[in-house]
Structure formats: C-alpha cells, structure tokens
Length: 221
Image 1 (cartoon, rainbow, N blue to C red):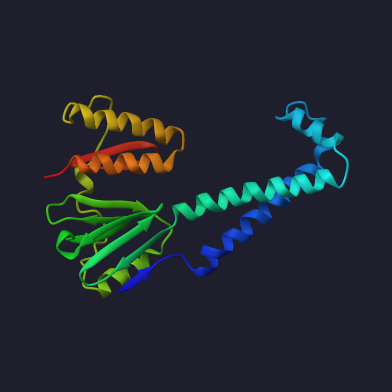
Image 2 (image 1 turned 90 degrees about the horizontal axis):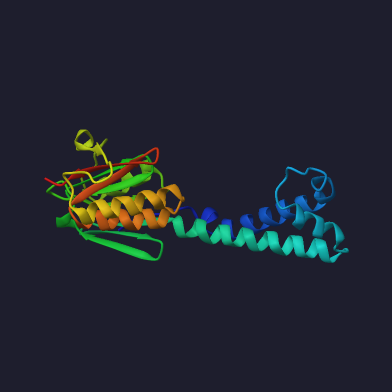
C-alpha cells in the first residue's frame, strides 16, 4: 500500500507556526495601537483605544494569548483541510475532515488531477470523488500507477460540462435546490459546506466542479 500525505514538517509544524505568527501579529498591532487610534478610518477603533488604556504587562500578555489562540484556530482549520490518500492494489481510501471515502478496485476505472482536485471515475464515467488538497500531483500519479490504476492527463469529459443557471431545465428540482444552496456557500467561502453539497449532488447522478465561483455540471451517461 502507498500513502500520500503532507510531510511531517507541515502536519506538525502548523501547530507551532500558526500560534507563533498569530501572537506576533497581534503583538505588533498592540505596539501600533496608539498610532492606529489616530487613523479614524481604521476599523475597531474602540478596541484599540481600550488597548491603550490597559497597563503593562497585562496588555502584552493578553495580546500574545489572543494571537496564539487565533493562530491555533487557523491551524485547526488548516489541518481539517489536509487529505491523505491510501492506495493499495484492491482499494483506495481518501481521508479528509474526519471523513473516510473508501472505494474498491472494481469501482475505479481511472484517476486524474484537475488543479488541486483529485478525481476518481467509475467505469460508467461517474465521478466517485472530487476532493481538493495540496498534495503533489506527481506523488499522486506515482502512487496510483504504482498500484496499477489508470492515470489520465486530463478530464475525458471536460467538454460535457455546462454552466449551471438558476432552475436549469435538464436538472431535477432537488438537484437545482442543492446547486442554489451551494452557490450561497461558495459566496460565503464556506468551503466544507460547498464540498458536502457537491457530494450530495454527485449522489444524484450529476457531476459538479467550479471555475471562478461559477458552478459547472454534467449529467452521468
């Protein structure tokens, strides 16, 4: 079995780097608080005015604590976005956001990468999975071809996609409703919600992908 995942330096380093950077940024803002209060256009003026009235060392301790906490939250979100891929001769397992997507060898006809997305296709051309990650395309290709899977250079159905519009006539009402909800999630940068809605759409026999906040789809053959 071959496993493709982020390096140990990235997986563990974010838990140190993000809190440190967060603390440094907030500490820098604390140092600039007096100057910022002279910039009336700058947001959160009340917060910075409060900061200027808190005595040392409490203001520095609070700034470092808040920054580190914010950095920790960022690290948590970053870790949730990471994906690991386990490829063996008889199955493929994707792990992301505490979810596991498991596919048998007979379910997978081919695999390809489009941008940062890994896509698994069934023998019928349906998309079994389309998941985003920062994993190396070369490492993914090596893992799949090394286990005997068919790796494609591009999406063989790229020309079949069309841009989704409200109440698309060739889609059922429930699928259009999911697309509408997904459009709202994309506009609010709710990436995990958008990904989950895309999975629900795929369950209904429709493939979906994004280009510059526009949704494109194709119906399975």
